Length: 329
Image (cartoon, rainbow, N blue to C red):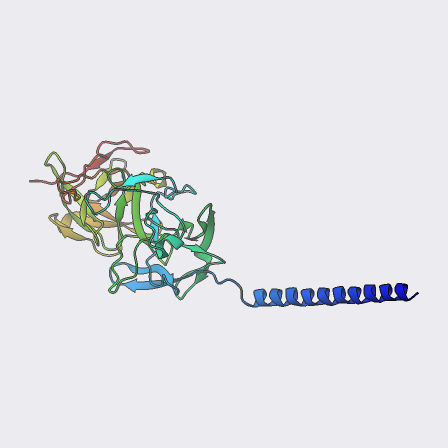
């Protein structure tokens, strides 16, 4: 009987110990749930910066990337992501600096100074948050494997490229990466308008450029804040090129009266598009740039800044032909 009684006593103590342990576990789990719910993961915050040249454009608010400009890519159109994760070889400012890289990658790469992706995606761990002047209804996300939830604005995926600067001088503005020897992502990079998410190219500079043949043509300045380059501009025989031309042909836009260099100011005008953007015209004809525009390198390895190849001349669009615009001697 003593043995049996002792045995029941041991089982009783063990049972109560298990009960006690279970209660403690439940309390701990409950506490963790409360703490988790009371401290949710914060979403990435977007704010605006207002400038004379670009108007109100999107930048990162807060954290180690505070003030970094946000960009969109002309090749990301209609759900198609032109800025992907396939590797390609692209030209760098160093004559011998061509790199094997992808167009995009995780946001953490820009913090760790990893340069194997050209334009790291701006991502978030929770619903992105609109700072003052940013429209919350235009913010969204798009999941990308190996990258995470990339923040979008009016459907445009947002990317990072260069740090903040004062005064505001975004290095990726009007940056072209069309075909080799450039990084061949096929398109142009621009700041993002806080108003509607459209490409914000700032005040356009229309200038005289020179083709390899020596012919002088109308150009638009690209990559103005790093390595200014005269990019061939084109007109379209059918007049206005509709959305069916995208992403191959992009309107030359401006946020103010275009500047001119070597071109008659009287020939330059503006045409308001359906979305409110202002497209630059020459002699009343809207101007465009080509998504696979070729560039040339000098013997030093630097880009030839006086003009691109004009290889879009004579190409057929959805209803007409694109032509470079000759200038008189």
